[in-house]
Length: 212
Image 1 (spheres, rainbow, N blue to C red):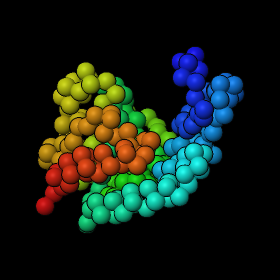
Image 2 (image 1 turned 60 degrees about the horizontal axis):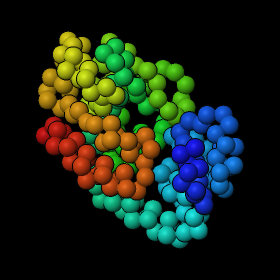
Image 3 (image 1 turned 45 degrees about the vertical axis):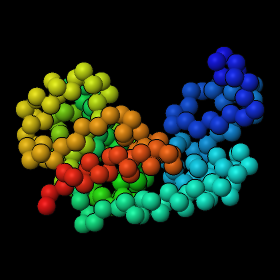
Image 4 (image 1 turned 180 degrees about the horizontal axis):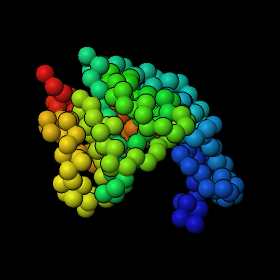
């Protein structure tokens, strides 16, 4: 109803997870263009180009993609440092990316980071998306820098006080970074504007923690 009240001429329906029947409902309001596949399986370049085509600005989209790719290349770090990141769901559980083709993992590789070898021990299938990791296995996220975002900021102090967290070498050595969910949003749903934020605001905080 809120969308209908806006009286849109076009609806861009680019969602990671689609509730059955959503596209049909939106199409009754206005012409609706959906992504060709789930967004967590798409490069941000593909999303940008599909939106450009949908709004009749394909050439502008190509130019924007080239500009942002140049920014990523310029911001890429040297030396292939390892970086692990996850979202903290609760005191006992984290959400980590899975699958070689996951959007977040691809983007971090483009920025020059590599994944800790323990990623191969997560198990599960190799599709993109996220999977649960028990806090007891935080050791699998040890890396040159560990980056965590808290879904519920109120659990941060208790989570960080746990012995299992304190025992992770990256934490003990001061190579741990806590970020807001907004900071890692570009890793889950990257857009040109979101990538600008990640490059300008988050990448420098990561590189400041890298060991000499």
